[in-house]
Length: 80
Image 1 (cartoon, rainbow, N blue to C red):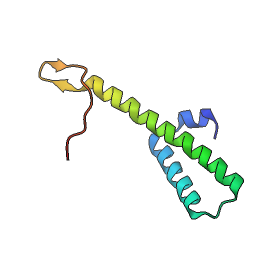
Image 2: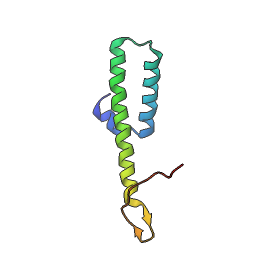
Image 3: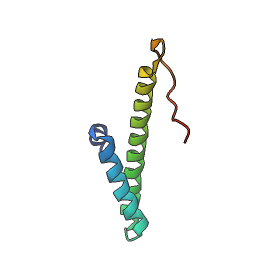
Image 4: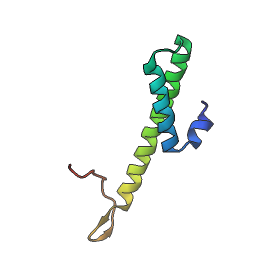
């Protein structure tokens, strides 16, 4: 998986690929060299997903609405 491929992938696609890699590694039926390659791919996908989520969070901060109109405000998840 090269950088161009990871840059163009959507979040959902990256998560799907990451889940498949994790399942393969958990299965334990993968030769060592392939396991290392899968692990490296998984780390790239995990970073990509994290970066995409961070980007969305930043966008949400910019569009949070207040009583005074649109204002930059940190994004917070509601307490459950």
